[in-house]
Length: 116
Length: 110
Image (cartoon, rainbow over the protein chains, first blue to last red):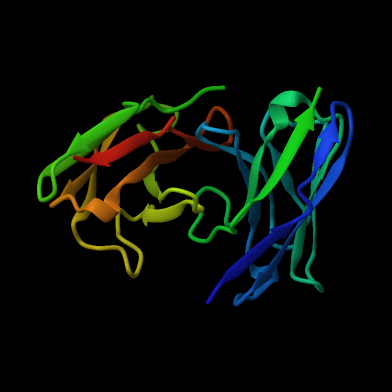
């Protein structure tokens, strides 16, 4: 059974930084692209970033390009999201998910709150 | 932020057939498969319909989807109370080079 467990969510000030982690189990981690998506309070889903299985290629939504960095450590079955220059509108639950385009497995999410 | 267009709400009585629509463009639904996700209250989204228009294992067969041109729809045949939640369509967008989601439809079983 595929399981994804996010951590690292926090309350941070505008302009601050936070690093999210997502540990995966139940799959050959390096075989699959991984993504981060987010959901602002009471709002819909937004894809944020993705990384290929090897980690060699990364992709970003325009809303976070230049501020967020996705990375992975296949030896630890972990994908990260480094978030810098945080804005109030980055406040959201951040989910990691298997895949890029179609997301058959999701973690339970971790909350990032950016205060002004 | 560009999104696929869904009605904000839908409802039906238990046992009723309910359809949720999703409108896009030639850069997304018009060219690419559509996924549907179900998000029950307080939980993470769950893939309901995959890119082959199939239901993943465990998804009841009362859920089905269709696509025509730049629009797609999710149909629930025989609404049940446990189906209450939010439903999102999604499709790859060639212009954005990434997946695009609808704004979500809140489904209520009256």
